[in-house]
Image 1 (cartoon, rainbow, N blue to C red):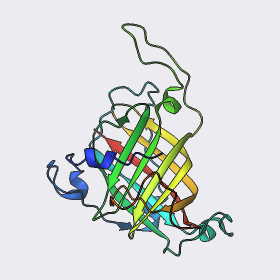
Image 2 (cartoon, rainbow, N blue to C red):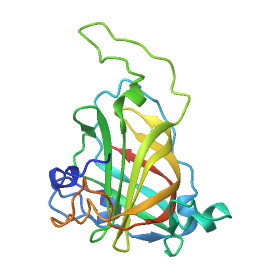
Image 3 (tube, rainbow, N blue to C red):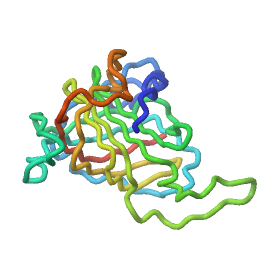
Image 4 (cartoon, one colour):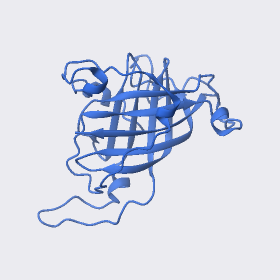
Length: 229
């Protein structure tokens, strides 16, 4: 489940100067919410993939995410468990935001991105998906694991136009993951609308309760991210 308290703890971090005009830690996150569609179709940068997930600290960069009705994205009808959302297909861009260190106890990595108002996105996956279940170095002993060849299973959430959409299982292809850069691309065929929005917390909504919408609206999500220290 995507962390719902992470945004509260993340409030003091800097945002990319290229997107906010300032690198001050007190500057509010600002990003161009809508981008040209081609921006979401670009490929993320590549780099070294350190499966040990050591020394990860990221202040700058961003995410590009396309939000579309499943019917228009797949050329068919959405699953029977969800209905089309009625949203306009669009590409959004959000700046890196929150705690520079992505580790969320006990065993997750969380990357948060923020735009104007309550808009934003977050990616979360189990650290073991990246490390292969190998323990961190102990003294001079550094366990080894083979190269990462398959996508990770990630949870991805996006808040746009006052609605929060969440996908519980998205293939996330990591193209870089080290202390120098983290990047990857993702595709979520179906993300359902949730009442509980971590970018717009509401005390009247229980994050653990069943969603109030009997048949939740759905969108598809796709895009990529790239962040640096």
